[in-house]
Length: 387
Image (cartoon, rainbow, N blue to C red; front, side):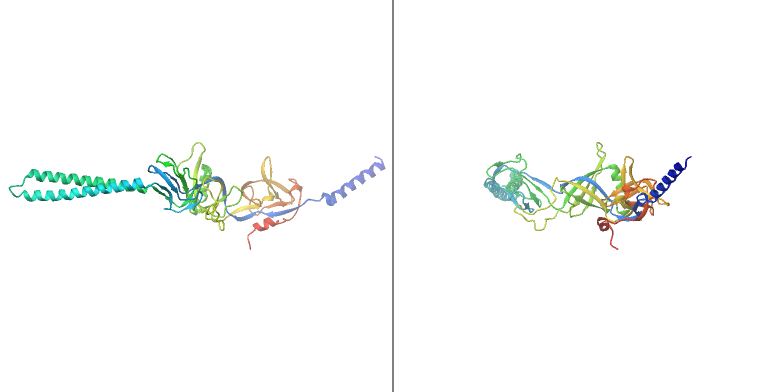
């Protein structure tokens, strides 16, 4: 081997050693954090629909002309308020006729009572006859029956007269009227208008049987479903400001979808300073689709890590765990409930392990790293509980 070749080889070796010590080839700096328990409110998310607690379809119970509509469409009405006024004179006349019939029968019955009394008195004399007494008793009984029938007819007529005034059976918001003044309404005319009770409202949603069993098991020692509170996300993405309670679990499972229906009750108060020309304004509307959040009342302690520490590839979710010799080791994990800043861990990590949070893009599995404290972002700082 020539001296020149040996010198060149030594030169390359020295350059390689120098490059190995250069800052560019040093282990990448990363931010790390220990896996620990953190309090979270367990949340399950479903799709549901708002449903009125009470809904009444108004219908006519007699045949008559509609004389007056005594409400404004879309406004809230109180129980007992007059809504429709039908013509009354024909029904009033019928009541008067039935009353007159009663008075006639009462007069006839009074005469029959006197006749029977006389016949019974004469029965003790030679002029009295048993047949006369029997006839008087029969006439009295017949008139008593007629009086009862006439009184029943009067009550029927009075009831029908009352039906000419259609009132609100519940408090609520009344919708559009299907008929206008001057038309004849009948019991077969269908729904005149619909009243929907506004506060509170039901939120009804299906969940899988598996989810139902998991919820039941999770809250069995905490009061059952009574320990679950309901929040909803409105169609515009806002979280509704009121909190509801779960109050019903159906007793059958839909075989076609393997789901069971749950229902909760949630307040729907009038919005402050939102009294418009259409009356009180409320946020929840019967039939509205919403996202339903089932949350535990008390927070639970779970393994939790920053969401930024989690990466995903074809094999699933994983994190980099720091080994004792400061190497980044891939660890597959199963995530539970997650938020934009935090992820709970179902399996794959243990409390006290150190994971890489910052600088993950510079990390390769099995390669050494230079660990340091993780940088806390403002969003993460806001998530931390006050000391």
